[in-house]
Image (cartoon, helix red, strand yellow):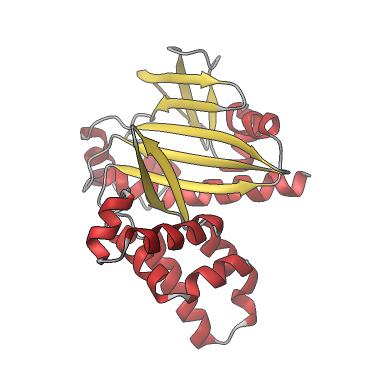
Length: 257
């Protein structure tokens, strides 16, 4: 956590985070242009933010795109929130809210480091028993490329021929088209109105990918959810849902040892 506090202490780095919050997925060139900062300075600040896990990067062709990552802010809030007075609590809550606000893009990126192994993490994502316990949903599939899957959440089973495994490289990468939005989902989440679900169902089918990379005694898990309408209902739903699910997954795996 020291790295996170150090990274947030510098006003230039906070400007970079603000810029990514306004428009996620920027290249180094774009960040330099928006902030009128020298390329070398931006590179150095981004390196500090990456080391603190406040920024995650994804290569797209020859460019490296930068995304805001809220997980370290969640960790700060979880560990320290009870030790501060109400004024400081509100400050932390406001910062957390800003960093978790959905950017108006067709991609949502989230990175977390989990003290586990690639094998156990893969099992936690793909084994229905574990994923239901750890993330609140289960996925039944043979996990072969091109196979369909069933999404299960609180007893609701969602099947559709367009729910397909796109990539499956055990212990390294998994990608699939996102589940169908059925009217019965408001039984799972009462906060979802029939209108919300109908709107999400009318939007393009999006896609989810998990990239798994060992880093020492931890595993770096990067989730990318893309392909949705940047201003649509799906973006709003998943930008709140995935951080909760992945935070729960991290806690469960690390408690299990």
